[in-house]
Length: 98
Length: 526
Image 1 (cartoon, rainbow over the protein chains, first blue to last red):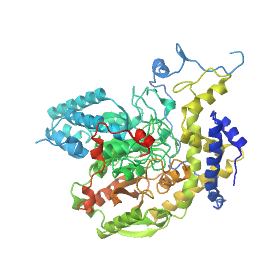
Image 2 (spheres, rainbow over the protein chains, first blue to last red):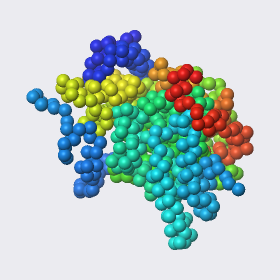
Image 3 (cartoon, rainbow over the protein chains, first blue to last red):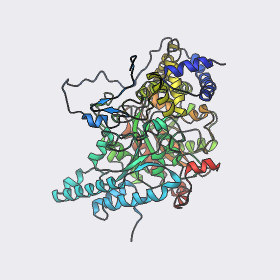
Image 4 (tube, chains in turn purple, yellow):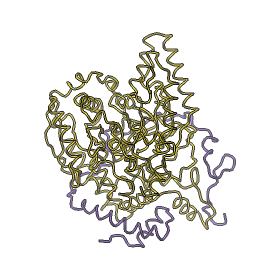
């Protein structure tokens, strides 16, 4: 049973910001539907009265004192930047006319 | 008389170091030489840094010398891993070192800081030789999803070492290093430990800080040790465990020093089993399990029973839902975690498209490999509007049921569970790549432990068709000390078993400097 159409796959790829080739989209359409078929098993599980579990440890919020501590210097942080201008990352323009 | 230092356990090396028979510098040089000599055919390593390792070895020797001057108490206070070589999976930050997570998108990225586990290893005085190969972003069960080519299995170079921590497992099995660090999100330590015939442990979620680890699925990821026996793996777990305020899920629970006190005597170790209650979950003997695997696990259970434990068949009724629930939760968390790879602050970057969206699409489309794209797509879909309740929320509810299954057994008084690690022994290269669901099935017996946040181990329990079979031990939260006692007890019970003397079959081939790499062999179709 195909749940995802080709245009669904293209939409999800855009949401995920993945540029995929036509070949990749075609392969993923088949693979994702095959994997989603396995998920159908979950639909048979009665979970109406079951709370969801997002994480497993029985810890409440762990807070620390709100005080400044040492952190990485700008050069260390920027050392891996693909494009850099002084102490700044160069980012793609997100406003028009950039 | 000289011994090949690479054949020794870490605890044996530690004894010789303290006795003054050998230096860390000699131990480290021997392991570096073996890793350099044997890795062409194995490809367990992505980077080896000889100079840094030798500096760390010298520092360890200096620490030991200084402690000797101070007196016996100071020598006794040194960690057993002082001066011992260790490998890190290539998703653990090591300041100044490349950290690829097996991905092209992080090629050339150099970690600006040390991970918590790296700091802990430095505190202990362990010597880090380098970084090991892995499935890209730890997504995979064979190490075939590494962007840098697959790793071989020292037992049969035509087969996978398991994954995702395949390089860490293979390096220990091939005597390149006595212990190594891996991570386990759905079985990525236990399954390769099983496939490579060594010990691997995934601790309780929260036991080891994840600070400085490349994230895959944050509610499931845990860091853990590989070793060739329980004592070595326990010492490494001890070294890296404990509270770290930079990971808010790191638990303020004391690290059990019992991990450093596992008995040397086989008889004493085995005596721990008397009166212990072990469960054998029937659902873990899944459809399609190889008969040899099921037989070795049942024989191991019988051996534990003969040594004084009671072994009862138990049920974890929601096991069958684990795979589906895991393959929603893990990709969902991954799709969120991997949003950070945008080509702006670090990593692979493509610029110059018609707008910023085009740059993101090109960067991520070109930087990620096929399995990572598949998981990001699955996760994005499961979290997207209209599908969240049907998939993600449903999977989180299934997670509650899986956890409750285990809780009932701990409440009933079971000390641990024994089970298979994986339905099969190590499989041949290429046999599961075409069907992702077949690859995912390799984790069917391990991922419920991650969903429940429990500690689990894989220990060798014999061979099937000449390949190692892993026995999985599963415990209640924070029961690592007991799990390692059980593992050490099983070693004691089976100390004279013939299979314990069998070494990985293809070790000799690795000595051939002209041996083709796993990628070359796979390309040639053999």
